[in-house]
Length: 225
Ligand code: CA
Image: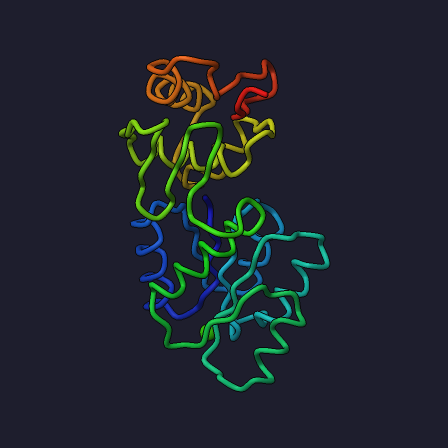
């Protein structure tokens, strides 16, 4: 899952980016309001972490412009201020959640996960497709009771497909959400990773495969109906 961080304090921004990458997210960091807004409008992200006070463009204004552009990506606002008025302003501008500095990384992580699971499953961290389960907190993947060992890229790819289950996902979309923007990924690489996922998730098990190729369009994960 790909996160956008717009934060001008290098220490906070750097720590967030490192921590999120360690938690297997793809994270892009911008320290300027205008540049960050351009990224938010120009690319697709799964969650946006937005500082309130930024050079060149205020966090509230960025939030408003993202919503005005019709982008519904969940936004978490970060602020040094603790007044209730600021919180209300942030939420009115279209933010989904609010964190007051200093905050713990664990809390931010919990809130990111809460926002990510909103549309899929309201009550736990486990994604399900048929008898395949993926625990986004413990990195545990199982088909039935059998545990499946995945590399971190395979895990991210499977998580992305499962969060979008039933939908056809293009290779470009997969590249955008599973890999960092500065890594040089070709469509062939996606095919190779889909192949290795199939060898682990589908081939060893009886019954219909879950990962489907839609020729010319992309991939879809879905249980048989
Ligand atoms: Ca700031």
